[in-house]
Image (cartoon, rainbow, N blue to C red; front, side, top):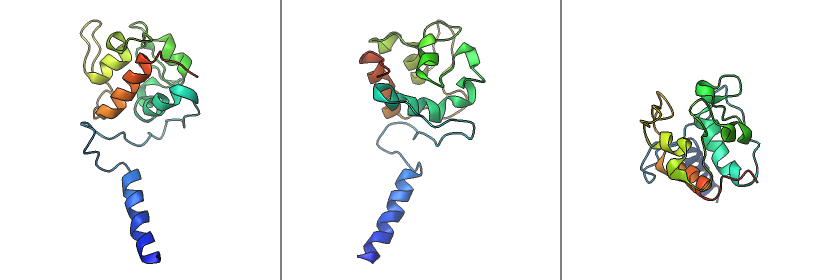
Length: 139
């Protein structure tokens, strides 16, 4: 039994370390940056807060809110930024947060996010879109 347990633990460690994400159609969600805070969100928002914490905090933290947008918590996301509301509850197609994760937006002109980093995995973008479609609820 011990001979099987050691390789199994090794496989789990590799899977959890952000290895290849071949089935998602995009890059795996990277580990959080050193400046990121751990998510303490609960309810429906928790599923997307972890994505924002891991990918968006270098530029959209409470201290450094690029474009006027802070993604450090639900209220910051719902407040939006200089380009207007980031989320239109129930409508992922017109929600800026979903649009910029899928690619650059022309009106207003916003580059694809995360900026200067690999795109999010398609599964992570879909989680954000599904959360918005379900009403973008905090709890």
